[in-house]
Image 1: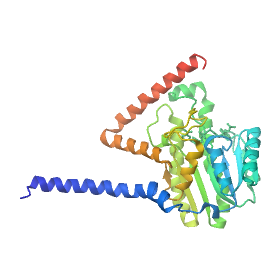
Image 2 (image 1 turned 90 degrees about the horizontal axis):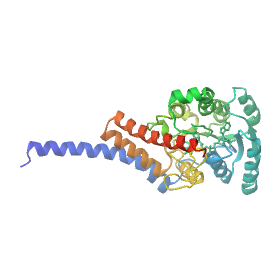
Image 3 (image 1 turned 120 degrees about the horizontal axis):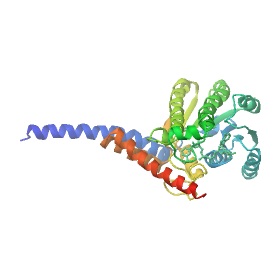
Image 4 (image 1 turned 120 degrees about the vertical axis):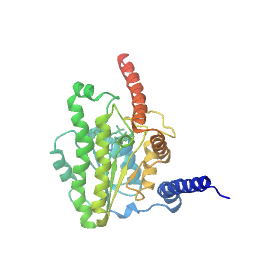
Length: 317
Ligand SMILES: NC(=O)c1ccc[n+]([C@@H]2O[C@H](COP(=O)([O-])OP(=O)(O)OC[C@H]3O[C@@H](n4cnc5c(N)ncnc54)[C@H](OP(=O)(O)O)[C@@H]3O)[C@@H](O)[C@H]2O)c1
């Protein structure tokens, strides 16, 4: 005979099992079955002839430029250094035989830089915008210390990481809406959702990108616009200072290939399975412990990184 204890236990197990299953199925569809078994949800080549990429002379931005050129897009590369832009444009032109325009602007400048960009992209059939440009702290630091050391730098983070995203969207959306198709890819960071003390302004700027992308998608989904907010963990670039790629810190090319594969499946995505694993581990840790403990864990980790960076700097390395 089933005791009331057994009955209660079975019901509780059933509820927990159902909850896990209900969360796992959509996750597995978005991250595994969809992109790997069913294939792309969206044929990106059909959205237009031109792709605009900010911060496109290095790292993830350059990888997007190459990947989109490979798909046949003509490119508008926007970055800070004219000589680097010319070199990258030549490299991509030679390899993929696509048309390339370059625009040199410093996104830490004032709103007037957007007039130059507007003039540069005017009349182009823009199908894809990749808001990639971003800056972070040179090393993890307390908010007040970083402010006192260089108040302008914290202003720059907001200009480059936030204003560039809003202004670039405002510049390309009218064309996309006219043609009722377009893809906007906003590069955020896992720092937006995982506790990132000592990178406070950077992580908050990326949380803006998350929220902006989510609500922008709701506003324009019915008008044929797809928004993807990409939240990478570590990728081996100048910004992360990771020189040797690994499974957890892939090359920008490997990361971007994964992000493009998953396009259209979800608005917000780490876009790379091992980073998705890290995100899940964090969610699990949060579930098992409590928010202050989890935040404290990451604080300790970032304090160690800060200590190492300061020690390296004191030795002049
Ligand atoms: N790498 C990671 O581990 C990681 C993790 C999470 C999120 N992300 C995000 O991914 C995006 C790309 O990062 P990344 O690692 O590829 O960076 P990166 O290798 O440092 O490249 C940054 C690119 O942006 C350009 N840029 C920087 N500041 C600029 C400015 N003020 N005006 C115009 N262009 C500027 C750089 O041009 P110059 O060469 O002229 O400086 C370069 O082309 C960022 O939004 C970042 O927050 C990166």
